[in-house]
Image (cartoon, rainbow over all chains, first blue to last red; front, side, top):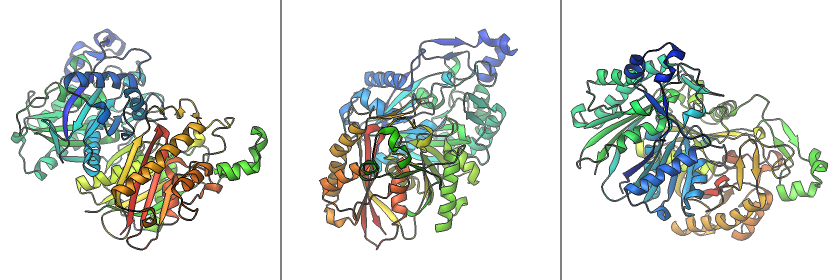
Length: 307
Length: 307
Protein backbone atom coordinates (compact mmCIF):
# COMPACT_ATOMS: atom_id res chain seq x y z
CA UNK A 1 0.00 0.00 0.00
CA UNK A 2 1.09 3.57 -0.69
CA UNK A 3 -0.31 6.14 1.70
CA UNK A 4 -0.58 9.55 0.09
CA UNK A 5 -1.48 13.08 1.08
CA UNK A 6 -4.77 13.75 -0.70
CA UNK A 7 -5.71 17.15 0.71
CA UNK A 8 -4.64 19.86 3.15
CA UNK A 9 -7.02 22.12 5.03
CA UNK A 10 -5.69 25.32 6.56
CA UNK A 11 -6.68 27.95 9.06
CA UNK A 12 -4.88 31.29 9.13
CA UNK A 13 -6.71 33.53 11.61
CA UNK A 14 -7.98 36.74 9.93
CA UNK A 15 -6.66 39.00 12.71
CA UNK A 16 -3.31 40.64 11.91
CA UNK A 17 -0.64 42.43 13.93
CA UNK A 18 1.26 44.90 11.73
CA UNK A 19 5.04 44.95 11.96
CA UNK A 20 5.21 48.52 10.62
CA UNK A 21 3.54 49.67 13.87
CA UNK A 22 6.44 48.21 15.85
CA UNK A 23 9.42 49.63 13.94
CA UNK A 24 10.08 52.49 16.36
CA UNK A 25 10.05 50.11 19.35
CA UNK A 26 13.06 48.31 17.96
CA UNK A 27 14.74 51.08 15.94
CA UNK A 28 14.10 49.20 12.68
CA UNK A 29 12.96 50.34 9.25
CA UNK A 30 10.52 48.95 6.71
CA UNK A 31 13.30 47.55 4.54
CA UNK A 32 14.36 45.29 7.41
CA UNK A 33 10.96 43.70 7.97
CA UNK A 34 10.18 43.34 4.27
CA UNK A 35 13.61 42.36 2.92
CA UNK A 36 15.25 40.53 5.86
CA UNK A 37 12.42 39.04 7.90
CA UNK A 38 10.00 38.88 5.00
CA UNK A 39 7.08 39.44 7.37
CA UNK A 40 4.94 42.60 7.08
CA UNK A 41 2.16 41.40 9.37
CA UNK A 42 1.54 38.42 11.60
CA UNK A 43 -1.62 36.29 11.79
CA UNK A 44 -2.92 36.10 15.32
CA UNK A 45 -5.53 33.85 16.87
CA UNK A 46 -8.34 35.28 18.94
CA UNK A 47 -7.70 35.51 22.68
CA UNK A 48 -8.84 32.32 24.34
CA UNK A 49 -8.47 30.19 21.22
CA UNK A 50 -6.18 27.20 21.67
CA UNK A 51 -4.50 24.56 19.56
CA UNK A 52 -7.62 22.41 19.59
CA UNK A 53 -9.81 25.30 18.33
CA UNK A 54 -7.37 26.18 15.56
CA UNK A 55 -7.02 22.55 14.48
CA UNK A 56 -10.81 22.12 14.37
CA UNK A 57 -11.03 25.05 11.92
CA UNK A 58 -8.30 23.50 9.76
CA UNK A 59 -10.17 20.16 9.71
CA UNK A 60 -13.39 21.99 8.76
CA UNK A 61 -11.52 23.64 5.88
CA UNK A 62 -10.12 20.27 4.83
CA UNK A 63 -13.65 18.90 4.62
CA UNK A 64 -14.58 21.64 2.13
CA UNK A 65 -11.74 20.62 -0.20
CA UNK A 66 -12.04 16.86 -0.27
CA UNK A 67 -14.47 14.24 1.03
CA UNK A 68 -13.24 13.42 4.54
CA UNK A 69 -14.73 10.20 5.99
CA UNK A 70 -14.24 11.05 9.67
CA UNK A 71 -15.77 7.76 10.85
CA UNK A 72 -13.01 5.88 9.02
CA UNK A 73 -10.04 7.81 10.41
CA UNK A 74 -7.72 5.30 12.10
CA UNK A 75 -4.90 7.62 13.17
CA UNK A 76 -4.98 11.19 14.44
CA UNK A 77 -1.64 12.87 15.11
CA UNK A 78 -1.22 16.46 16.29
CA UNK A 79 2.13 18.19 15.94
CA UNK A 80 2.57 20.93 18.54
CA UNK A 81 4.95 22.21 21.20
CA UNK A 82 2.32 24.45 22.76
CA UNK A 83 -0.62 22.22 23.65
CA UNK A 84 -3.58 23.74 25.52
CA UNK A 85 -2.93 21.33 28.39
CA UNK A 86 -0.38 18.66 29.28
CA UNK A 87 -2.88 15.85 29.66
CA UNK A 88 -4.53 14.48 27.65
CA UNK A 89 -2.65 14.85 24.34
CA UNK A 90 -4.37 17.31 21.98
CA UNK A 91 -5.18 14.43 19.63
CA UNK A 92 -7.38 12.82 22.31
CA UNK A 93 -9.34 16.04 22.82
CA UNK A 94 -9.70 16.46 19.04
CA UNK A 95 -10.75 12.82 18.72
CA UNK A 96 -13.53 13.63 21.14
CA UNK A 97 -14.53 16.95 19.51
CA UNK A 98 -14.52 15.44 16.00
CA UNK A 99 -16.52 12.40 17.11
CA UNK A 100 -13.98 9.91 15.76
CA UNK A 101 -14.32 6.15 16.26
CA UNK A 102 -12.82 3.77 18.79
CA UNK A 103 -10.42 2.25 16.25
CA UNK A 104 -8.55 5.57 15.88
CA UNK A 105 -5.15 5.79 17.55
CA UNK A 106 -4.21 9.22 18.94
CA UNK A 107 -0.90 10.80 19.86
CA UNK A 108 0.89 14.14 19.64
CA UNK A 109 4.39 14.79 18.39
CA UNK A 110 6.54 17.49 19.91
CA UNK A 111 8.69 18.94 17.17
CA UNK A 112 9.11 22.53 15.97
CA UNK A 113 9.55 23.97 12.49
CA UNK A 114 10.46 20.49 11.23
CA UNK A 115 7.25 19.14 12.77
CA UNK A 116 5.28 18.62 9.58
CA UNK A 117 8.00 16.63 7.83
CA UNK A 118 8.64 14.58 11.00
CA UNK A 119 4.91 13.99 11.31
CA UNK A 120 4.62 12.94 7.67
CA UNK A 121 7.46 10.42 8.08
CA UNK A 122 5.90 8.99 11.27
CA UNK A 123 2.27 8.86 10.10
CA UNK A 124 3.15 7.26 6.75
CA UNK A 125 5.39 4.70 8.50
CA UNK A 126 2.64 3.70 10.95
CA UNK A 127 0.02 3.58 8.18
CA UNK A 128 2.24 1.21 6.21
CA UNK A 129 3.15 -0.96 9.19
CA UNK A 130 -0.42 -1.31 10.44
CA UNK A 131 -2.13 -1.22 7.04
CA UNK A 132 -4.19 1.87 7.91
CA UNK A 133 -6.34 3.45 5.21
CA UNK A 134 -7.22 6.89 6.62
CA UNK A 135 -5.20 9.27 8.80
CA UNK A 136 -5.18 12.92 9.84
CA UNK A 137 -1.97 14.83 10.51
CA UNK A 138 -2.64 18.18 12.19
CA UNK A 139 -0.25 21.02 12.96
CA UNK A 140 -0.89 23.94 15.29
CA UNK A 141 1.70 25.90 17.20
CA UNK A 142 0.39 29.38 18.12
CA UNK A 143 3.60 31.14 19.10
CA UNK A 144 1.65 34.29 20.02
CA UNK A 145 1.14 32.57 23.40
CA UNK A 146 4.90 32.28 24.07
CA UNK A 147 6.52 35.22 22.28
CA UNK A 148 7.51 38.18 24.44
CA UNK A 149 6.30 41.27 22.49
CA UNK A 150 9.33 43.18 23.79
CA UNK A 151 11.86 40.64 22.44
CA UNK A 152 13.36 42.01 19.20
CA UNK A 153 14.58 38.54 18.20
CA UNK A 154 11.13 37.01 18.02
CA UNK A 155 8.41 39.71 18.30
CA UNK A 156 8.07 40.43 14.56
CA UNK A 157 8.52 36.95 13.11
CA UNK A 158 5.89 34.39 14.11
CA UNK A 159 2.26 34.00 13.08
CA UNK A 160 -0.49 31.66 14.31
CA UNK A 161 -2.06 29.02 12.05
CA UNK A 162 -3.12 25.39 11.88
CA UNK A 163 -3.32 22.81 9.12
CA UNK A 164 -5.06 19.46 8.61
CA UNK A 165 -3.56 16.97 6.18
CA UNK A 166 -5.64 14.00 5.14
CA UNK A 167 -3.75 10.86 4.13
CA UNK A 168 -5.29 7.77 2.61
CA UNK A 169 -4.25 4.89 0.38
CA UNK A 170 -6.16 5.65 -2.79
CA UNK A 171 -6.81 8.47 -5.24
CA UNK A 172 -4.49 11.17 -6.56
CA UNK A 173 -2.14 12.78 -4.06
CA UNK A 174 1.45 13.12 -2.88
CA UNK A 175 3.30 9.96 -1.83
CA UNK A 176 6.28 10.12 0.53
CA UNK A 177 9.34 8.62 -1.17
CA UNK A 178 12.17 9.27 1.28
CA UNK A 179 13.18 11.40 4.26
CA UNK A 180 16.53 12.67 5.51
CA UNK A 181 16.39 13.75 9.14
CA UNK A 182 18.83 14.68 11.86
CA UNK A 183 19.80 16.93 14.73
CA UNK A 184 22.89 19.13 14.83
CA UNK A 185 25.14 18.23 17.78
CA UNK A 186 25.44 20.81 20.53
CA UNK A 187 22.68 23.12 19.30
CA UNK A 188 19.68 22.34 21.51
CA UNK A 189 19.63 25.83 23.09
CA UNK A 190 19.24 27.83 19.85
CA UNK A 191 15.46 27.95 20.43
CA UNK A 192 14.18 27.50 23.98
CA UNK A 193 10.97 28.20 25.85
CA UNK A 194 10.45 28.11 29.58
CA UNK A 195 8.23 31.10 30.30
CA UNK A 196 8.71 32.62 26.87
CA UNK A 197 10.52 31.89 23.67
CA UNK A 198 14.20 32.75 23.40
CA UNK A 199 15.86 32.49 20.00
CA UNK A 200 19.49 32.89 19.00
CA UNK A 201 18.70 34.04 15.47
CA UNK A 202 22.31 34.00 14.35
CA UNK A 203 22.79 30.41 15.54
CA UNK A 204 19.58 29.33 13.79
CA UNK A 205 20.79 30.91 10.55
CA UNK A 206 24.20 29.26 10.83
CA UNK A 207 22.68 25.87 11.68
CA UNK A 208 20.34 26.10 8.69
CA UNK A 209 23.16 27.14 6.37
CA UNK A 210 25.26 24.22 7.59
CA UNK A 211 22.66 21.46 7.61
CA UNK A 212 19.77 22.12 5.21
CA UNK A 213 21.54 22.23 1.82
CA UNK A 214 23.56 19.15 2.84
CA UNK A 215 20.35 17.34 3.78
CA UNK A 216 18.76 18.18 0.42
CA UNK A 217 21.85 17.01 -1.45
CA UNK A 218 21.99 13.76 0.54
CA UNK A 219 18.34 13.01 -0.19
CA UNK A 220 18.67 13.73 -3.92
CA UNK A 221 21.89 11.72 -4.22
CA UNK A 222 20.34 8.72 -2.45
CA UNK A 223 17.37 8.84 -4.84
CA UNK A 224 19.54 9.35 -7.93
CA UNK A 225 17.90 12.70 -8.66
CA UNK A 226 19.27 16.04 -9.76
CA UNK A 227 17.94 19.39 -8.56
CA UNK A 228 16.31 19.87 -11.95
CA UNK A 229 14.18 16.76 -11.38
CA UNK A 230 12.39 18.61 -8.56
CA UNK A 231 9.65 21.03 -9.60
CA UNK A 232 9.46 22.94 -6.31
CA UNK A 233 11.45 23.08 -3.08
CA UNK A 234 9.28 24.01 -0.12
CA UNK A 235 11.69 25.11 2.59
CA UNK A 236 10.39 26.14 5.97
CA UNK A 237 10.23 29.95 5.66
CA UNK A 238 12.20 30.72 8.82
CA UNK A 239 12.84 34.22 7.48
CA UNK A 240 13.43 35.70 4.05
CA UNK A 241 17.13 35.97 4.88
CA UNK A 242 17.38 32.24 5.60
CA UNK A 243 15.40 31.40 2.49
CA UNK A 244 17.60 33.58 0.27
CA UNK A 245 20.66 31.90 1.71
CA UNK A 246 19.22 28.46 0.85
CA UNK A 247 18.23 29.61 -2.66
CA UNK A 248 21.69 30.97 -3.25
CA UNK A 249 23.51 27.88 -1.92
CA UNK A 250 21.38 25.50 -3.98
CA UNK A 251 21.12 27.81 -7.01
CA UNK A 252 17.30 27.96 -6.99
CA UNK A 253 15.20 30.92 -8.09
CA UNK A 254 12.23 32.29 -6.15
CA UNK A 255 9.71 30.44 -8.31
CA UNK A 256 11.20 27.04 -7.42
CA UNK A 257 11.84 27.89 -3.76
CA UNK A 258 8.92 30.15 -2.83
CA UNK A 259 8.46 32.31 0.25
CA UNK A 260 4.80 33.13 0.95
CA UNK A 261 4.65 34.44 4.49
CA UNK A 262 4.85 38.22 4.04
CA UNK A 263 1.25 38.67 5.19
CA UNK A 264 0.98 36.11 8.01
CA UNK A 265 4.43 35.24 9.38
CA UNK A 266 6.42 32.14 10.28
CA UNK A 267 3.79 29.64 11.43
CA UNK A 268 6.27 27.00 12.66
CA UNK A 269 5.05 23.43 11.86
CA UNK A 270 2.17 24.82 9.77
CA UNK A 271 4.39 26.71 7.32
CA UNK A 272 5.17 23.87 4.90
CA UNK A 273 1.63 22.42 4.69
CA UNK A 274 0.34 26.00 4.14
CA UNK A 275 2.70 26.42 1.19
CA UNK A 276 1.93 22.96 -0.19
CA UNK A 277 -1.81 23.53 0.16
CA UNK A 278 -1.75 26.63 -2.05
CA UNK A 279 0.08 24.77 -4.83
CA UNK A 280 -1.33 21.28 -4.32
CA UNK A 281 -2.14 20.34 -7.94
CA UNK A 282 0.63 18.79 -10.03
CA UNK A 283 1.10 16.48 -12.99
CA UNK A 284 1.53 12.80 -12.04
CA UNK A 285 5.20 12.06 -11.49
CA UNK A 286 6.04 15.58 -10.33
CA UNK A 287 8.55 15.54 -7.47
CA UNK A 288 8.95 18.03 -4.67
CA UNK A 289 11.28 18.47 -1.74
CA UNK A 290 9.89 19.65 1.61
CA UNK A 291 12.46 20.73 4.17
CA UNK A 292 11.51 21.60 7.73
CA UNK A 293 14.19 22.81 10.15
CA UNK A 294 14.48 24.74 13.38
CA UNK A 295 13.91 23.85 17.05
CA UNK A 296 16.44 21.21 18.06
CA UNK A 297 18.33 22.23 15.90
CA UNK A 298 16.75 19.48 13.88
CA UNK A 299 15.55 19.00 10.36
CA UNK A 300 13.58 16.58 8.22
CA UNK A 301 13.76 16.84 4.43
CA UNK A 302 11.22 14.80 2.48
CA UNK A 303 10.89 13.81 -1.15
CA UNK A 304 7.25 13.57 -2.26
CA UNK A 305 5.90 12.49 -5.62
CA UNK A 306 2.55 13.20 -7.24
CA UNK A 307 0.68 9.95 -7.97
CA UNK B 1 14.97 -5.86 8.35
CA UNK B 2 13.45 -6.70 11.72
CA UNK B 3 14.05 -4.09 14.40
CA UNK B 4 14.04 -5.63 17.85
CA UNK B 5 14.21 -4.46 21.44
CA UNK B 6 17.59 -5.73 22.67
CA UNK B 7 17.75 -4.17 26.12
CA UNK B 8 15.94 -1.89 28.55
CA UNK B 9 17.63 0.34 31.09
CA UNK B 10 15.61 1.68 34.00
CA UNK B 11 15.80 4.32 36.66
CA UNK B 12 13.50 4.15 39.68
CA UNK B 13 14.57 6.89 42.09
CA UNK B 14 15.56 5.44 45.50
CA UNK B 15 13.50 8.01 47.46
CA UNK B 16 10.11 6.70 48.60
CA UNK B 17 6.93 8.30 49.89
CA UNK B 18 5.02 5.85 52.12
CA UNK B 19 1.28 5.49 51.57
CA UNK B 20 0.78 4.16 55.11
CA UNK B 21 1.72 7.63 56.41
CA UNK B 22 -1.18 9.15 54.48
CA UNK B 23 -4.02 6.80 55.47
CA UNK B 24 -5.48 9.10 58.13
CA UNK B 25 -5.54 12.05 55.71
CA UNK B 26 -7.97 10.20 53.49
CA UNK B 27 -9.75 7.96 56.03
CA UNK B 28 -8.32 4.84 54.38
CA UNK B 29 -6.86 1.63 55.80
CA UNK B 30 -3.88 -0.50 54.88
CA UNK B 31 -6.05 -3.10 53.15
CA UNK B 32 -7.18 -0.45 50.66
CA UNK B 33 -3.70 0.62 49.58
CA UNK B 34 -2.31 -2.91 49.45
CA UNK B 35 -5.30 -4.77 48.02
CA UNK B 36 -7.07 -2.16 45.88
CA UNK B 37 -4.40 0.30 44.76
CA UNK B 38 -1.57 -2.19 45.06
CA UNK B 39 0.84 0.60 45.98
CA UNK B 40 2.50 0.66 49.41
CA UNK B 41 5.03 3.35 48.59
CA UNK B 42 5.78 5.64 45.67
CA UNK B 43 9.15 6.30 44.05
CA UNK B 44 9.91 9.98 43.95
CA UNK B 45 12.55 11.90 42.07
CA UNK B 46 14.78 14.40 43.83
CA UNK B 47 13.56 17.98 43.86
CA UNK B 48 14.90 19.79 40.83
CA UNK B 49 15.34 16.62 38.77
CA UNK B 50 13.52 16.70 35.47
CA UNK B 51 12.60 14.33 32.66
CA UNK B 52 15.98 14.82 31.01
CA UNK B 53 17.85 13.95 34.23
CA UNK B 54 15.75 10.83 34.83
CA UNK B 55 16.15 9.69 31.22
CA UNK B 56 19.93 10.17 31.37
CA UNK B 57 20.03 7.80 34.36
CA UNK B 58 17.96 5.23 32.49
CA UNK B 59 20.30 5.46 29.49
CA UNK B 60 23.31 5.02 31.81
CA UNK B 61 21.66 1.90 33.25
CA UNK B 62 20.97 0.62 29.73
CA UNK B 63 24.67 0.95 28.92
CA UNK B 64 25.54 -1.36 31.86
CA UNK B 65 23.27 -4.10 30.48
CA UNK B 66 24.16 -4.13 26.82
CA UNK B 67 26.74 -2.51 24.56
CA UNK B 68 25.13 0.77 23.47
CA UNK B 69 26.85 2.39 20.47
CA UNK B 70 25.68 5.96 21.10
CA UNK B 71 27.51 7.33 18.06
CA UNK B 72 25.40 5.08 15.84
CA UNK B 73 21.99 6.02 17.25
CA UNK B 74 19.85 7.32 14.36
CA UNK B 75 16.58 7.95 16.18
CA UNK B 76 15.91 9.24 19.69
CA UNK B 77 12.30 9.41 20.82
CA UNK B 78 11.16 10.54 24.27
CA UNK B 79 7.66 9.69 25.48
CA UNK B 80 6.42 12.21 28.03
CA UNK B 81 3.50 14.47 28.85
CA UNK B 82 5.47 16.43 31.42
CA UNK B 83 8.55 17.76 29.64
CA UNK B 84 10.93 20.07 31.51
CA UNK B 85 10.22 22.79 28.95
CA UNK B 86 8.01 23.25 25.89
CA UNK B 87 10.84 24.00 23.49
CA UNK B 88 12.98 22.25 22.45
CA UNK B 89 11.57 18.72 22.63
CA UNK B 90 13.23 16.65 25.41
CA UNK B 91 14.82 14.44 22.75
CA UNK B 92 16.81 17.41 21.42
CA UNK B 93 18.15 18.23 24.88
CA UNK B 94 19.00 14.57 25.47
CA UNK B 95 20.64 14.37 22.04
CA UNK B 96 22.88 17.22 23.19
CA UNK B 97 23.57 15.78 26.66
CA UNK B 98 24.33 12.30 25.30
CA UNK B 99 26.58 13.69 22.55
CA UNK B 100 24.70 11.93 19.76
CA UNK B 101 25.53 12.43 16.09
CA UNK B 102 24.06 14.70 13.43
CA UNK B 103 22.35 11.81 11.63
CA UNK B 104 20.04 11.18 14.64
CA UNK B 105 16.43 12.32 14.28
CA UNK B 106 14.78 13.56 17.48
CA UNK B 107 11.16 13.99 18.50
CA UNK B 108 8.94 13.51 21.55
CA UNK B 109 5.61 11.73 21.72
CA UNK B 110 2.86 12.92 24.00
CA UNK B 111 0.95 9.88 25.18
CA UNK B 112 0.17 8.66 28.68
CA UNK B 113 0.04 5.17 30.15
CA UNK B 114 -0.12 3.75 26.62
CA UNK B 115 2.98 5.77 25.73
CA UNK B 116 5.48 2.91 25.61
CA UNK B 117 3.40 0.76 23.29
CA UNK B 118 2.60 3.75 21.08
CA UNK B 119 6.30 4.65 21.05
CA UNK B 120 7.30 1.09 20.17
CA UNK B 121 4.85 1.05 17.24
CA UNK B 122 6.11 4.41 15.96
CA UNK B 123 9.83 3.81 16.43
CA UNK B 124 9.75 0.36 14.81
CA UNK B 125 7.69 1.72 11.89
CA UNK B 126 10.16 4.56 11.24
CA UNK B 127 13.16 2.22 11.62
CA UNK B 128 11.66 -0.08 8.99
CA UNK B 129 10.65 2.70 6.61
CA UNK B 130 14.00 4.49 6.78
CA UNK B 131 16.18 1.40 7.24
CA UNK B 132 17.58 2.61 10.58
CA UNK B 133 19.84 0.27 12.54
CA UNK B 134 19.95 1.82 16.03
CA UNK B 135 17.27 3.69 18.00
CA UNK B 136 16.54 4.74 21.56
CA UNK B 137 13.00 4.93 22.95
CA UNK B 138 12.90 6.72 26.30
CA UNK B 139 10.00 7.13 28.72
CA UNK B 140 9.82 9.54 31.65
CA UNK B 141 6.68 11.05 33.13
CA UNK B 142 7.29 12.19 36.72
CA UNK B 143 3.73 12.69 37.95
CA UNK B 144 5.01 13.92 41.32
CA UNK B 145 5.27 17.31 39.60
CA UNK B 146 1.54 17.40 38.72
CA UNK B 147 -0.22 15.39 41.44
CA UNK B 148 -1.97 17.40 44.14
CA UNK B 149 -0.98 15.67 47.43
CA UNK B 150 -4.44 16.50 48.82
CA UNK B 151 -6.30 14.75 45.98
CA UNK B 152 -7.46 11.33 47.20
CA UNK B 153 -7.98 10.13 43.62
CA UNK B 154 -4.35 10.49 42.64
CA UNK B 155 -2.15 11.20 45.69
CA UNK B 156 -1.38 7.57 46.56
CA UNK B 157 -1.05 6.04 43.12
CA UNK B 158 1.76 7.42 40.96
CA UNK B 159 5.53 6.95 41.16
CA UNK B 160 8.39 8.57 39.23
CA UNK B 161 10.66 6.57 36.92
CA UNK B 162 12.30 6.55 33.52
CA UNK B 163 13.30 3.83 31.08
CA UNK B 164 15.58 3.58 28.05
CA UNK B 165 14.89 0.92 25.43
CA UNK B 166 17.53 0.18 22.85
CA UNK B 167 16.32 -1.14 19.50
CA UNK B 168 18.54 -2.42 16.73
CA UNK B 169 18.31 -4.80 13.79
CA UNK B 170 20.53 -7.64 14.95
CA UNK B 171 21.10 -9.92 17.91
CA UNK B 172 18.61 -11.58 20.25
CA UNK B 173 15.69 -9.47 21.41
CA UNK B 174 11.96 -8.85 21.17
CA UNK B 175 10.48 -8.13 17.73
CA UNK B 176 7.19 -6.27 17.36
CA UNK B 177 4.69 -8.42 15.47
CA UNK B 178 1.45 -6.44 15.61
CA UNK B 179 -0.32 -3.64 17.46
CA UNK B 180 -3.97 -2.91 18.17
CA UNK B 181 -4.54 0.71 19.14
CA UNK B 182 -7.50 3.02 19.61
CA UNK B 183 -9.21 5.73 21.59
CA UNK B 184 -12.59 5.38 23.28
CA UNK B 185 -15.10 7.94 21.99
CA UNK B 186 -16.20 10.63 24.40
CA UNK B 187 -13.67 9.85 27.13
CA UNK B 188 -10.97 12.50 26.75
CA UNK B 189 -11.69 14.09 30.14
CA UNK B 190 -11.12 10.96 32.29
CA UNK B 191 -7.54 12.12 32.96
CA UNK B 192 -6.75 15.83 32.59
CA UNK B 193 -4.03 18.18 33.71
CA UNK B 194 -4.07 21.95 33.58
CA UNK B 195 -2.47 23.01 36.85
CA UNK B 196 -2.66 19.58 38.41
CA UNK B 197 -3.83 16.11 37.50
CA UNK B 198 -7.50 15.27 37.79
CA UNK B 199 -8.58 11.65 37.40
CA UNK B 200 -12.03 10.12 37.28
CA UNK B 201 -10.91 6.76 38.64
CA UNK B 202 -14.24 5.08 38.09
CA UNK B 203 -14.35 6.18 34.43
CA UNK B 204 -10.77 4.93 33.90
CA UNK B 205 -11.70 1.54 35.39
CA UNK B 206 -14.83 1.29 33.22
CA UNK B 207 -12.95 2.34 30.08
CA UNK B 208 -10.24 -0.24 30.75
CA UNK B 209 -12.80 -2.97 31.43
CA UNK B 210 -14.60 -2.13 28.19
CA UNK B 211 -11.63 -1.70 25.86
CA UNK B 212 -8.55 -3.62 27.02
CA UNK B 213 -9.78 -7.26 26.97
CA UNK B 214 -11.44 -6.57 23.59
CA UNK B 215 -8.16 -5.16 22.28
CA UNK B 216 -6.23 -8.24 23.44
CA UNK B 217 -8.78 -10.57 21.86
CA UNK B 218 -8.72 -8.64 18.58
CA UNK B 219 -4.93 -8.82 18.42
CA UNK B 220 -4.79 -12.54 19.18
CA UNK B 221 -7.58 -13.35 16.73
CA UNK B 222 -5.87 -11.38 13.95
CA UNK B 223 -2.65 -13.30 14.60
CA UNK B 224 -4.39 -16.68 14.86
CA UNK B 225 -3.16 -17.12 18.44
CA UNK B 226 -4.85 -18.40 21.58
CA UNK B 227 -4.25 -16.98 25.03
CA UNK B 228 -2.21 -20.07 25.87
CA UNK B 229 0.25 -19.20 23.09
CA UNK B 230 1.26 -16.12 25.10
CA UNK B 231 3.73 -16.72 27.95
CA UNK B 232 3.13 -13.41 29.75
CA UNK B 233 0.68 -10.52 29.49
CA UNK B 234 2.20 -7.25 30.65
CA UNK B 235 -0.73 -4.94 31.28
CA UNK B 236 -0.14 -1.39 32.39
CA UNK B 237 -0.51 -1.65 36.18
CA UNK B 238 -3.03 1.19 36.55
CA UNK B 239 -4.00 -0.21 39.95
CA UNK B 240 -4.28 -3.70 41.42
CA UNK B 241 -8.05 -3.47 41.11
CA UNK B 242 -7.84 -2.80 37.36
CA UNK B 243 -5.30 -5.58 36.93
CA UNK B 244 -7.45 -8.08 38.81
CA UNK B 245 -10.41 -7.15 36.66
CA UNK B 246 -8.34 -7.81 33.51
CA UNK B 247 -7.02 -11.11 34.89
CA UNK B 248 -10.51 -12.21 35.73
CA UNK B 249 -12.01 -11.21 32.37
CA UNK B 250 -9.24 -12.92 30.40
CA UNK B 251 -8.89 -15.85 32.81
CA UNK B 252 -5.20 -15.24 33.55
CA UNK B 253 -3.42 -15.99 36.81
CA UNK B 254 -1.03 -13.61 38.57
CA UNK B 255 2.05 -15.37 37.17
CA UNK B 256 0.97 -14.75 33.59
CA UNK B 257 -0.34 -11.22 34.21
CA UNK B 258 2.02 -9.83 36.84
CA UNK B 259 1.66 -6.71 38.95
CA UNK B 260 5.00 -5.42 40.29
CA UNK B 261 4.42 -1.90 41.49
CA UNK B 262 3.71 -2.34 45.21
CA UNK B 263 6.98 -0.66 46.16
CA UNK B 264 7.22 2.15 43.60
CA UNK B 265 3.77 2.96 42.17
CA UNK B 266 2.18 3.53 38.78
CA UNK B 267 4.95 5.06 36.66
CA UNK B 268 2.74 5.86 33.63
CA UNK B 269 4.61 5.24 30.34
CA UNK B 270 7.53 3.63 32.21
CA UNK B 271 5.44 0.88 33.81
CA UNK B 272 5.47 -1.66 30.97
CA UNK B 273 9.19 -1.32 30.09
CA UNK B 274 9.98 -1.65 33.83
CA UNK B 275 8.05 -4.92 33.99
CA UNK B 276 9.56 -6.18 30.73
CA UNK B 277 13.06 -5.24 31.84
CA UNK B 278 12.86 -7.43 34.95
CA UNK B 279 11.78 -10.47 32.90
CA UNK B 280 13.63 -9.77 29.68
CA UNK B 281 15.10 -13.22 28.99
CA UNK B 282 12.97 -15.74 27.12
CA UNK B 283 13.30 -18.78 24.87
CA UNK B 284 13.30 -17.94 21.15
CA UNK B 285 9.75 -17.97 19.81
CA UNK B 286 8.20 -16.92 23.12
CA UNK B 287 5.35 -14.46 22.61
CA UNK B 288 4.14 -11.74 24.92
CA UNK B 289 1.35 -9.20 24.92
CA UNK B 290 2.02 -5.68 26.18
CA UNK B 291 -1.05 -3.54 26.79
CA UNK B 292 -0.79 0.13 27.69
CA UNK B 293 -3.96 2.13 28.38
CA UNK B 294 -5.03 5.30 30.15
CA UNK B 295 -4.89 8.99 29.23
CA UNK B 296 -7.11 9.58 26.21
CA UNK B 297 -8.79 7.18 27.00
CA UNK B 298 -6.52 5.40 24.59
CA UNK B 299 -4.73 2.11 24.40
CA UNK B 300 -2.10 0.26 22.39
CA UNK B 301 -1.75 -3.51 22.73
CA UNK B 302 1.34 -5.06 21.16
CA UNK B 303 2.37 -8.60 20.36
CA UNK B 304 6.12 -9.15 20.70
CA UNK B 305 8.12 -12.26 19.95
CA UNK B 306 11.53 -13.34 21.21
CA UNK B 307 13.98 -13.79 18.31
